[in-house]
Length: 367
Image (cartoon, rainbow, N blue to C red):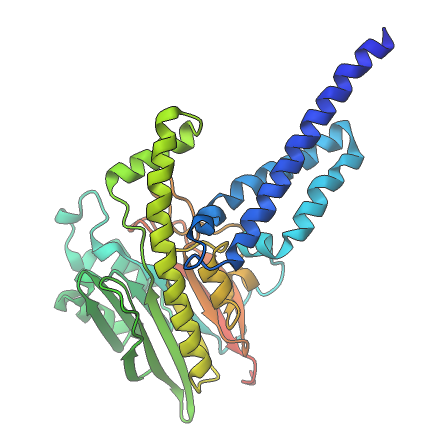
């Protein structure tokens, strides 16, 4: 009788072990897909988006084995060690660098959705929009905005200029960006993308006599998903094995891959620009439309540091609509900056994006 009871137990352990191994393999494949350019291998480009699912499943197996077979925890632990860099990028934990020292620059990046996101947007005076109030109240040193649209209106500019005396607006078809600063903006020049709808610009900012900063603001290629695409995505999440959803998956994967390939080329352009510029102090802000587990993020963090990875905590979801929950808004900086207190402010709900902010301290500057 003891033997009879023994076999089902071993069968279940084997099944769960195999499932655990499959989760670990899936997590590793998703993590390392970020090293492959979507321009050359577009089919792998969207794998980073499902990395969190494999990570959560792998972590849950640790608790499962803790109760039933502790030594099997090694399956998940070894897998997570192999993905340590990706896990830290996706969900950093920082006990230090929380309080910024005096003299740090406060930087904000915010996609404000043309100030049109509110349900009653047509009834709210544009100058009193919560996104405008937020940017005034947060009292940053430098603000980078994407999809600015109505920010160019005189009534908005008048309010913003009371806190940020220097500003610059860029427009390209439907896309618009803006930079607001407490420091003089000396020059501005676009970074050519060859894109009809997305853009990036560089700004030289004077911090003090003989002390300049190169600020880059960008809005990289979006997926351009229509409402039907988003409904299909929700359907896939709810029932991934549904026969009808298999067709949705193929269609959606094609759209995602095309946008990922365009963004990969844009990221390469930004890296080339950064490597060839002569500035030691560089800050890059923007809506990358890419998660921390992506070629775009991997490529850009080869030359700059992610302020959120260095000083933030948790996944920091910045886009939170239509079943898509990712951190696609980022602040990166050159190595001579130390990042402090990076946060995605989920309390701000006046756009389909949450703003992200941090403090940056020049390592060479004495307090």
